[in-house]
Image (cartoon, rainbow, N blue to C red; front, side, top):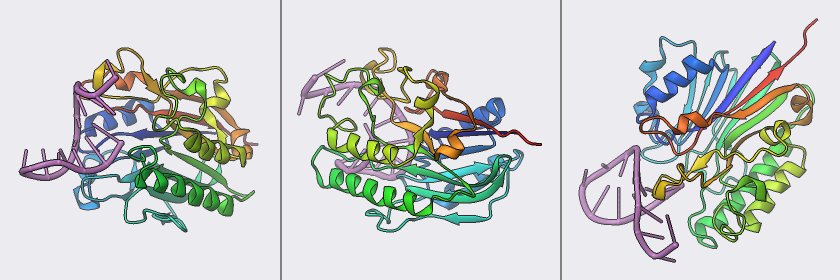
Length: 265
DNA sequence: ATGGTCGCTTGGCGA
C-alpha cells in the first residue's frame, strides 16, 4: 500500500485553481496540503472539486493566509488551532485525523508567518509561533498513529537550502534565530523527508516573483514535509515538483511530494 | 540588488 502526500503553497486558490486541478489529475496524491488559499471558506471554489475524488477540509480568512487539506479518505477530526498560537486570528493551521493506507494518521497543513522585517514585531511573533508549534507537536506524538506535517515553514534550515548562504546571511528566513527554531523542531524527532531522501540535493521550493529569480535559480527550500521516525521508516521517496514553477501564472512555490510504502501481509 | 512582481483589492499591504 502506498500513501502519496503533497504540500503546496499556491498563493491564492482562486488564481491557481486550474494548476491545482491539473496537479491532482496528473499526480493523483491521496492527500494535498495547501497554504495561502487567500479566501474565506465561503469563497473557496468547492464546486470545482465535486467531480474529483477529494474531500475538502478548509480554514480560510479574507484576503490573507488560509490553509486547506484535500483528501481521498474521509476525515474523522478537524482542528484549526493549537495551544499558545501567537496569531490565532490568522488562518495558518489545519489538522485532520483519518485512516489512510499506511494506518491511522494525524496530518497537519501549516503556514508559518513570514516574519516581515528581521527583528520586527512580526519577526518576534514568527519565533513564538515556532515555540508553540514545537511544544504542540511534541504533545501529540504517539506510537500508534502517524504524524505528518507539511507546509510553508518560511525557514531554510541549512546552507544547502539556499542559493547563496553568503548573500543571504542575516536575511529573512535564513537568520540564525529562525534556523535554530527549525533545527530545534528537526532535532526533537521530526524528519525532514526531502532531506532524508536527498542528502545532498540542492533544490528549492520557492523563488521570488521579482528580478527573474526563478530564471536565475535564486531560490530557497522553505517548504517541506516532516514526519516522526516510525513514519519516515516507510518513506519510499520525497521530491520537489519544480516544473510547476514554469507554468503560466505560477505560484511562487512548488509542490513537495512524499510517498510512503507499507508492506501488508 | 533599498529594486523587483504578484494577489487582493482599488490604496496600499503582505510576501
